Amino acid sequence: MTGPIVKTVTVPLSPERAFTLFTEEMSDWWPLDTHSLSAGDGETAKSVTVTPEEGGAVFETKPDGSTAQWGRVTEWDPGRAFGMTWHVGRPEDQASHVHVSFDVVADGTKVTLIHDNWRALGAEAASLRQNYHSGWDTVFCALYAGAAQSVMVTAA
Image 1 (tube, rainbow, N blue to C red):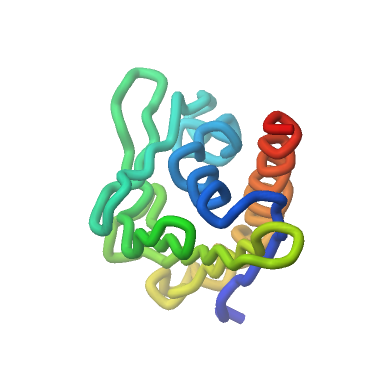
Image 2 (cartoon, rainbow, N blue to C red; image 1 turned 90 degrees about the vertical axis):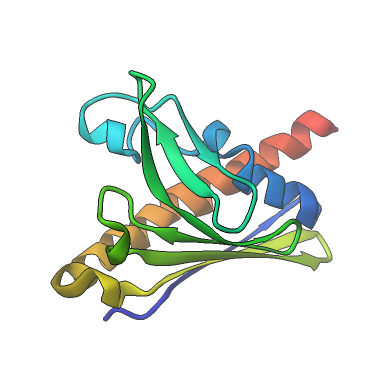
């Protein structure tokens, strides 16, 4: 099955703060030691950067200072939505797509991540989708949501 992956968490932050944490502070919660191109070389990436505009690059900075592109920003609507192509370690024409929405709920913000466009990955689509399905459980559901909890505790 190569339908979209959908993950949702509710975080105790405003949509604007949740958006900032997801985009501008990604290096603070993304597991760069295990989920980066540098990790494939046995190293930890220095950072991940999201250029804050449609068409902007999303890239990691490697330990030697070089950069490697992960994708391009397709939607930049602070506090509402963020989208990007996703082609970590692949040519840009093999990009899947990640879309994240931020919606106000009674106890904070419901953040929904949808990862789709698996057809761009051809024969590998099904196996890669399965890897990302569990990967987003760690990266998004556990680490991003955990970072949002920490932000709230720190702010209190």
